[in-house]
Image (cartoon, rainbow, N blue to C red; front, side, top):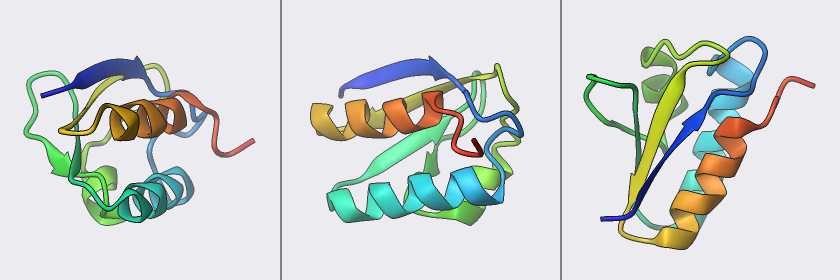
Length: 85
């Protein structure tokens, strides 16, 4: 299963606004995408609430996983961006 580990780029971490944008994008892709922090359980990237439960701060690593490489690339690129800018 394709996955990619990236660093959270949003200055406030994966809180409400970034989590919402990522969840919307994941839902639009129509495939299952998960996010996980090192040692943590994966959560559904289509749920802003689940994304926020990761507690991922700016600079933390997050692993994006999906059966679809394009989905991994798209969501990983969002996680890396400062979505609060």
